[in-house]
Length: 139
Image 1 (tube, rainbow, N blue to C red):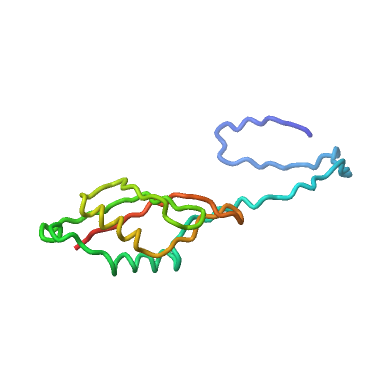
Image 2 (cartoon, rainbow, N blue to C red):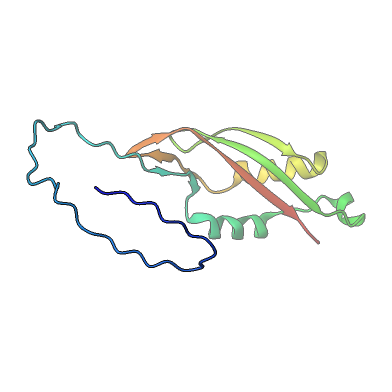
């Protein structure tokens, strides 16, 4: 392989021509190979049975606006961290962004009484996971 340095100076374009090198690899010798099984490292996040579209429909149809909040025209969102087991059951729910106790209770109720969940999968194996869910309260 031959190297050459060229001064660019004030030129905005340079024409370069490359030549093939005679020192090429003429044959490849395999000295060993692996019989290790490749693992499937794909990850599929947990999701509600029926998908998120039907889950969102369920939320809209079943959301019960807290009475006092409705009278005071309060709006906002509650953010939940939902812990889902490897069997798809909900293990725990934490409120990570609160809008008030009544809103939090309603958001948790919706998740607890809502559709079942399909667990997350790593390859073919079901695994525990967490999911962040926002419940919007809008009049």
